Image 1 (cartoon, rainbow, N blue to C red):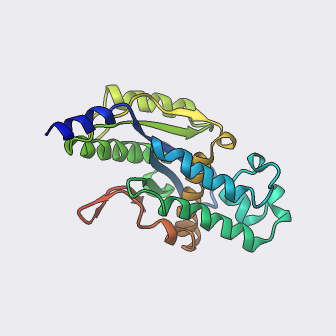
Image 2 (image 1 turned 90 degrees about the vertical axis):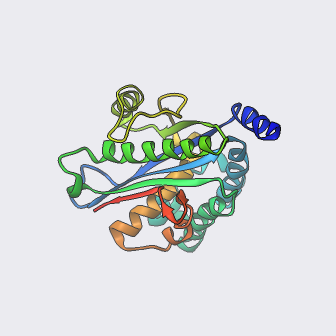
Length: 244
């Protein structure tokens, strides 16, 4: 019993970080889907995965790997500086980056919402998706608490035009509640950071893009790598919500 208490006490000094990014444009009538995806990492895991992603980026600019942003759509389509690199090498880098997650500690999990915009209209698909992954991440932390592994969570979001609305929505979830209750396990409202400065936001982008390609384009070559990493318990997948 003392060992369990000690582990729980020490665990309170650390937290789970959920790195979130999106794929798809809400205002584009030619796109049916919008995706919000989060990569949940125990904070002691973040350096190792970011370091592996740095090594992948270094394939394309060994002298300045920090200048290489791993961003799904430009990499696949060869936009911007990616055009000079062979398509096969770009695609392999995307797959290898996703494999950094699947080869890591099993406690690192995915949370995502795939939203067919017409299916949730007139609701804002961004707010709908945010409610889904935030509440699911919170319930995951609640399950850990019930197993005497109490952890807090923090969401780190890519800077976007949605920042003001999502900050307000997250505050309301913590105080007034969402449709399933009140957020109980998050330390603060989301923190918005520049994806160019965070390899793990870039990883979340690649995850979101993999989901977008599967549902929007019926292309599952990237999704197949990560499909078993969504939060699940007892055979039930909690980490992936699809609204179609």
